[in-house]
Every structure is written in structure tokens, then in C-alpha cells.
Length: 158
Image (cartoon, rainbow, N blue to C red; front, side):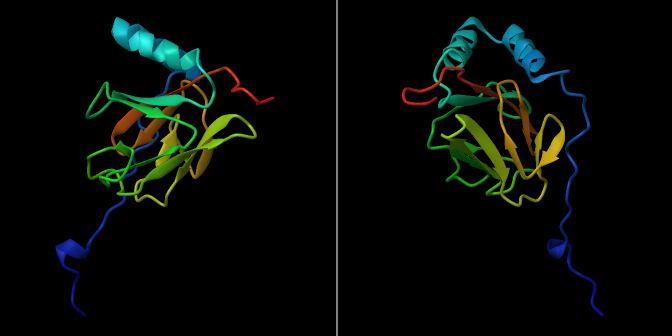
């Protein structure tokens, strides 16, 4: 029997659970706000004080630290594919890694892993689906992002 060539071998990296996450989502958000510039604080405040159907992902650790991605009620895809709205260029990220969608009935955003090789982690827990709240740490590959969303209900929502 022939042994597989090196190009046929794949490895799954276990990236979650390596570092402790702040005690709560709100403490991670507070930590983040303490470490960003005034203009970034203004942007985060605009999201936090805006409607619940707008959100942002902010890279706070890893490559491209400080990059921000606006998320609307149309949601977004996260991955290494150039077609992804949240493009994370690293081999630890699957081409189609995860997707975020807005659930209008609950006025929340939900993230779902897209059967990625290395998994999607929220606050160091591997998830398949998770309803996001402000301050959640989202880990995709070696990227650590903070999820921030508005607190106001949109017009017509209960």
C-alpha cells in the first residue's frame, strides 16, 4: 500500500480554549474601549447606541488588528474567500468559515459555523450556532474579533 503524499495530508488545528477570555462579554468590551483611539471609541459608541439591526466586528488580536467590519440586517459571510464580506486572509481560516445572519423576530444576530476545518469559537467555546451579544469574542482561525451591536429596537419591532 502506498503512503499518502504530503499534499494529501491535512491537520485540524485546535485554536480555542488556549487563552482565558475576560470574565464576561461586557468586561471584554470595556477592555476594548480602554485600548482604542478616540475616533474608534466614537465609532463603537455609534454602533452601541444605534439600532439592534446594525453591528460591527473589530479585530482586537491577530493579523489586521484594528480592522472593522460593519454588519447590517443582510448579515455577512466570514472566510478566506475573496467573496467574503469579512475577509480574513490566513490559512487557519476556511474559505467559507462562518456566516452571521440577523433574526428579526428576536432582534439579534446569530453566527453559524460553515463546517470549517478549525471551527468557530465564541468566548473560547466551539459552536455550531450562537446568538451574539455585544462584547462576545469571536475567534476564527488566529483572528480574535469583538462583536458589537446596537441596543435600540428598530422601528416596527416589539
